[in-house]
Image (cartoon, rainbow, N blue to C red):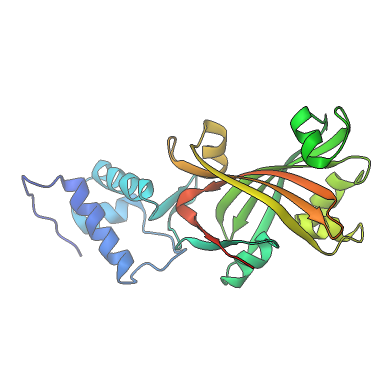
Length: 242
């Protein structure tokens, strides 16, 4: 049982946070494990629940733990090393790290190609597109939320296929496209808005990395226009030259 003595120079919640962090570092709570509840932590550190709640909030802000509504607080795994290469596949990258990749369809809509999307996808302005909004996870942790646009004429069943497979690679394979590559990638940083913060289980004001990309088939024809927002504290982009 931890006992924290009062210290006029250090706030009590900070001492609780430091104590929990030390326990995480030495492996008392492995990555992905659920921490004891607030009552148990308060008793073990001999403080009140308000102090524990503030300590956990500070650890969450630093990306060490993640609170799941109605479930509890979990130790965050280390950042995923996410290579940026000509063939970037979310499921392969996450799986290579020993974690389970999942894709969740959030919404699918038909839209007309704006001037920018038409230029990227080499289509006339106003061409019918299918927009797929999805959430990608590694184990329980949400990693990115993104939008993908593709031709509704070329892929009329895109929504049905993504709903079935939860994978853009498997969707394309159903159209006999088994190899495709990233033609361009642009990365910028931003602050998560309320919608992305909720989906990514981030605090308001936390950073996201915005990745805009264009995927093409083996003949160089545009397939997918992508705009994804990654939780900056859960990924580390690695630029690879091939």
